[in-house]
Length: 295
Image (cartoon, rainbow, N blue to C red):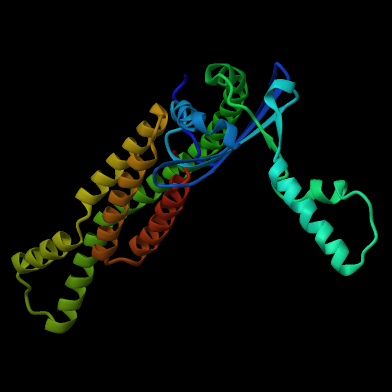
């Protein structure tokens, strides 16, 4: 199967009729940290639950998936109506006593007795598991195929959105990178002008100014953070391109991106860098929210 990015939300339905037996299967899922598959099926099919789950897990790897299996049979051999004669006789006996004591009129108790619990019960005899499985499998495969297709379609939309936000982050990071050297130069000029005003014509030691500027530049240097952030963005695009189970990888990567952006923000000493960093963190948070939906 083609490796692609998938959403954890999806829906799929399948039906199949074989030998007067009809199977209807529905799958729907929402986000979840793990692969949690819950199956609701008739008691007559309970022996197939583990087999059904393993079959689904071959194509579904993460999310909370609810599976609903309906089974209708029109085959005479699949239905057995049981009559509990002892219970029916007990009911009739008690009804006759009630009729005599209360002076009630009436004839047959047939209709009333048949409505009492457990007098008539419908049982579905256990059939060959292999025969039932072969009849159920086409409906299951159809439901899973549609389910996965929907998750892939939504995953593709999420991938495009995340990559668009990553492009915006690259623009903001480049803005910070271009602005950082200018901040140091502006600080140098401000420091020179301030000292000239304070010292009123007295010569200023260039070495002392250079030292102060170097300390300022070192405190506000974000070159390493920018390099790592750009590296994370390259990895993000690469992971999305390869596809598969990307959710957990991207979750870790976005945590690292957040760490770098927080460090840049803590070192920011310029209003333009601060503004760019705020936008940067906002875009990273949007990506984090989106990847929570990815398998």
